[in-house]
Image (cartoon, rainbow, N blue to C red; front, top):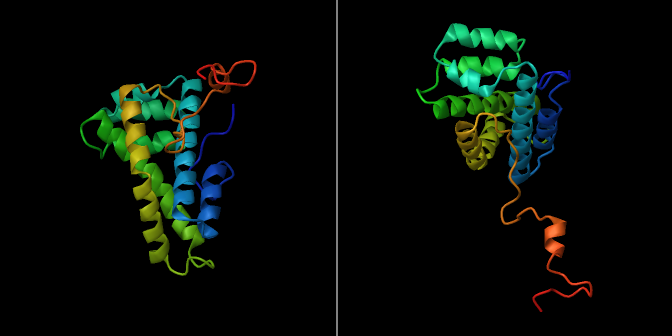
Length: 193
């Protein structure tokens, strides 16, 4: 079994978050950092949910147990204290009454934890002289991610077994090359010409 996903930027198992931190430190533009953070969030959630499935625990079970601390604690224990699961357990106790509230609180907590670490890791570097500047930048990044977070919350609310993916860039639909060529004749002309 692969090592569990981690939200600890100081550890060896949070590579995607470290890449994000490096881009912030290097002064990458807001859009690039937001894209990296969205990708890291989706991949981290995706891998975590797969790891939970390997341990025979689902997000649906965690959501169902969110109002029962004892049952939730047993599920987190079964997941061997997986960091994303421990954060879910903490968020379940403070989130609103609905599943969507719980999911939104959990995802916000993931982003908060990473954002805080990024801020502390890059402050004092060439591009970030003060913590206030980094925090303001990371707030803007988080604002850019609002549609991604809302989409993930909605999709997981509809289907807790859904595995998050980063959507394709705006205006760029993913194209299947085979489908694209279906309307082209052997002479290289469009079949509609």
